[in-house]
Image (cartoon, rainbow, N blue to C red; front, side, top):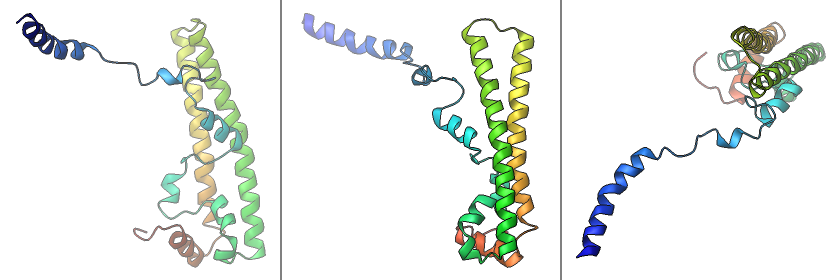
Length: 172
């Protein structure tokens, strides 16, 4: 009888205990990051000037990106002048976004260090987050600008071929 009462009591208490056990934070594995707000992959991508999805509004609305155009040069039958212009555009974009990415990493590192050192105040918080946000916006604008510039380099037929080859069959 005691065992039955104990088992019944355990069944009644278990759901109540489970409701209060919220478990570990989903961020627990991020504690060891060098910069808490950036993964190692994000840092590598920012340092390399990679797109990171910054130009999706352009890419998915029919504005080819220079990196992918270069990868598809044969398929698109780029002329020598088009190839040279695209290569120059890509190199300018990549050089600019690499420098901007390094600045963004530094700003995120400063923000992280200010919190880690418990030395942050309201003004520093606003300054660092505003600067980081502006830097991220500048990177995005540079990637989008390169997609926009590609429209002056490619023919409308090449843009169409690009879209088909990339699997963008609907829409524009």
